[in-house]
Length: 222
Image 1 (cartoon, rainbow, N blue to C red):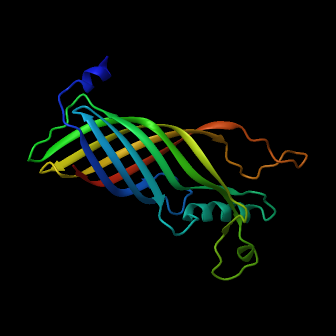
Image 2: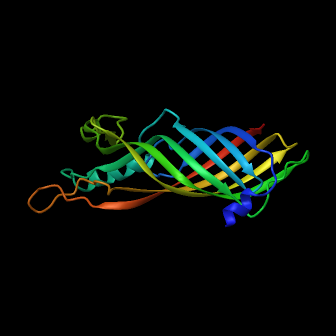
Image 3: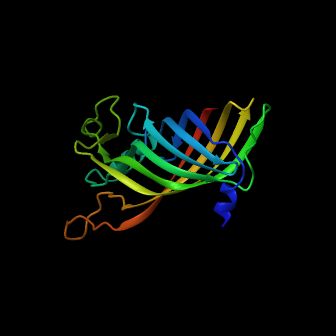
């Protein structure tokens, strides 16, 4: 009933397109940011639907924290099997419904709109791990402690997403947006290389994971 009431408000359909910077919050990802583009169809003053895609900027794959953790594990035990999981989100694709109790104003003066987002997002994740760098273990000068494996696995990880956004519009045509989204997914828990007493790998459970993302966008409306 609430949805029907929102859709029933008088409103000309609008089309918004935008592009911006997105930052995902993963301490073990060496470069957790990239470019996001989206298109949004405003069907009512309180309601819109949106499709978006994100692509990661190329660059360093191992964070300073990962180097530190791998180095500490090695210095504590030179025979350690420890490895630090490094999951790199290289792209994502999302579909959202935007709804708000406040109407979006279409006026030739600065306006603002606050709304919630509900949808699904599929992440393209390279699942990898970092272990001790042989050059570092051999004492090579300038060698970093951690090195990635030679056999990463790429997976599509879909899940629900919930967010909050704030639009600021200038002269009704150009605007900026800040959006925070929390993504949920079911994945296998991280593998740290732990072993059972008999030497077999420790079994891994399936767990619910959460991943936040912040987007800062520039938008135009038609």
